[in-house]
Figure 1: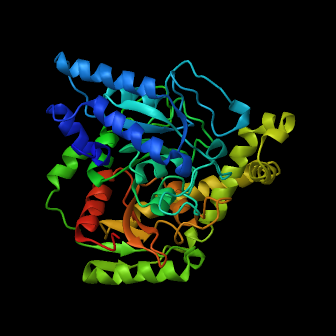
Figure 2: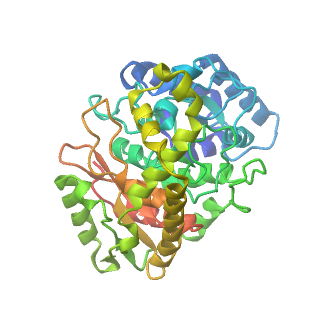
Length: 445
């Protein structure tokens, strides 16, 4: 194989399983690609080549010895630097945690190792997975942001440095970078993946999510990490969705009815992006109908900010008071907004958000999935921002599965993603619709 680093995770796992490819060779080629491009893209904050190769060799030896293979045996994965790793530093994108070395793997890393994955390294995150950007650039145009906060995770997959990566989403930090970087991105149903050992900003909003090169790859890594963890009190009792087998059972699936939702923040989209989304919706013909969200969603973004800012004021109280010079101005501004919020304001915002969850569930009575913008436009040509997450907040708040499908292009030739949303717990349906849309085609570039 001339370019094994370009294989999908599904293809790579199959090639390793049948002996056509070794994990060591795959990891070496990924490392070579990183060596060629990292100085420009800046997707990684920690990379230990010897550690990665040692993991790969051990997995190759295990295969030779006839030991049972996990679903990701020998496949490299990048980990956003907010997840604890026992053999690598976890620094949270902040000077406050420079050199921090956990003693235990986070839950998601532990599950990936159990599935046989090679933990290739730690990818760049914005400061504490919020909005102050790190060094990462968009691999399609180095003048542009890759999005955030999962900046390095999205860029590394987009630039063929690694086939899979792990990110997180509190507002739009998985789906939006997926749109900007042109890769598949999956935020599952809330409570599907353990958050143990993750830098937690908001119990109510934080999701673990993943990046990949195909819908099938999203299912592959999803099955590996959707496992109950008794140490995460917010996990679903039975988070596993049997995604790979579910997709296989729906191989001939075609949606009967889809809903196009502009959402209350439609005016925040660029005119070019509005045209692209509208044109694509029209191209689907009579299987798609446009619907408006009820008035209860008009202040969803405002409530999202109330919930998050209040959480930030509580989480960073000590740092804000004792070491404010070590925090970015963006983070301090968010904390300052959260400090004066009354408990009643947080309770009311949370109650309204909970009500929207039930309204969204009813939205799908007549539709297989919702199609809506993944981002307000192409990645901004501004490295001081990570872009606008307005089109992601509602779906994060409601805890529904959301997938970025890299179907479209903007007027500058940059990726523009379509966001596919399904009911809570219907992750297989979201994946099946995403696969159908991808196979049907769009402006793949």
